[in-house]
Image 1 (tube, helix red, strand yellow):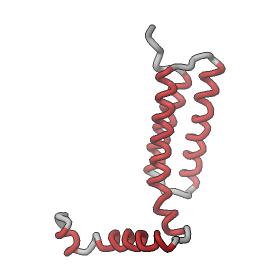
Image 2 (cartoon, rainbow, N blue to C red):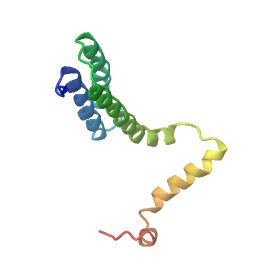
Image 3 (tube, helix red, strand yellow):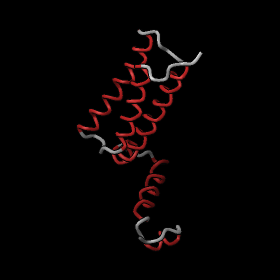
Length: 122
């Protein structure tokens, strides 16, 4: 038996994926970011609720929801990890790593470092 792919819960999940990708384009900790983040959270709750209420759960929908969750978590790491590096206190063992990471980011603009990395000046 063939599953319907465009059910209301799956559409909700697809909207969450689109919203999550949209979060990549917005500066974090701003009102538009919070609004889109909230939209993604609401659609995460709604898709499962609608699927159970309408008895339209499916294996495809469950997998799509898991994929949407993974994409959302990855985007949150990409958006918030740099902020956390700046804000949180650094433990002694992590201090050197953070210092090296910051130094590397600053040094990337140095032409000698760029040449050593094989990056051409544009």
